[in-house]
Amino acid sequence: RIYTTDPYNEEINQIIDCYIESGIPLIVSLEASGPTGHVIVLVGKVYEEVLWENVKTRKTLSHGDEVNYYDASDIPVKYVVQDDNLMPYRIISLDKPGEIYEDTVCKDYQIDGVVVPLYSRINLECVVAKKLILAILNDVKLGFKFGQDFVIRTFLTSSKSFKKHIVN
Figure 1 (spheres, helix red, strand yellow):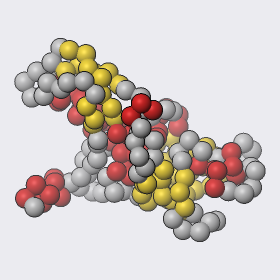
Figure 2 (cartoon, one colour; figure 1 turned 90 degrees about the vertical axis):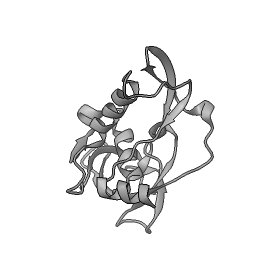
Figure 3 (cartoon, one colour; figure 1 turned 60 degrees about the vertical axis):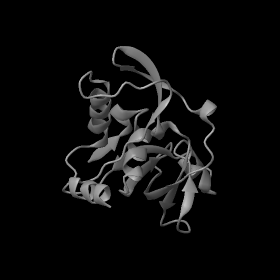
Figure 4 (cartoon, helix red, strand yellow; figure 1 turned 180 degrees about the vertical axis):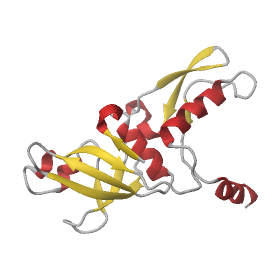
C-alpha cells in the first residue's frame, strides 16, 4: 500500500504509527526543497514518558454521549530508522526527520510518502481499520459505553496471530 502526503496530509503520521505499532517496517520517502530526496526504512519506535496534557484529545459519540478520547498515535514518540547514509538505528521525529543530518539541505527533509509492505493475511489497511473500530465501539448494540479520556491503540494483525495471542 502506498500513502502520500497528498491526500493524507495530517493523517500520514498516524498511518505510520499504526503500521509501526503493528510491527510492519515501512519505506518512507523524504523530500526537501529542490531536487534532493531520500528514502529511509522505519523499523520501530521509542517510548518516552507520556505527558497527557501535551496529547491532543479527540471527540466521539459513545451511546449518544459525546466523550473525549486519546488516540495512541497522537502521543509524541521517536522512531527508529535504518538509513544507508548514516549509522544504523538512528532515532528521528516524524515532524523533523532531517534533524539527524549534517547537510543543511537534508535538515529540511519532510515526509513525502510511505510504502507499506502489507502481509497477505492482513486484509484491512489502518485508515479503514481505525474508522471501523470507532464505528463498532460507538454502536449501541455492539459497542461499549466509555467514560471520558479513554485511549485507543490501533494495530493490525492476522486472525491466526490474534487467536494465538488469546490462547496464550
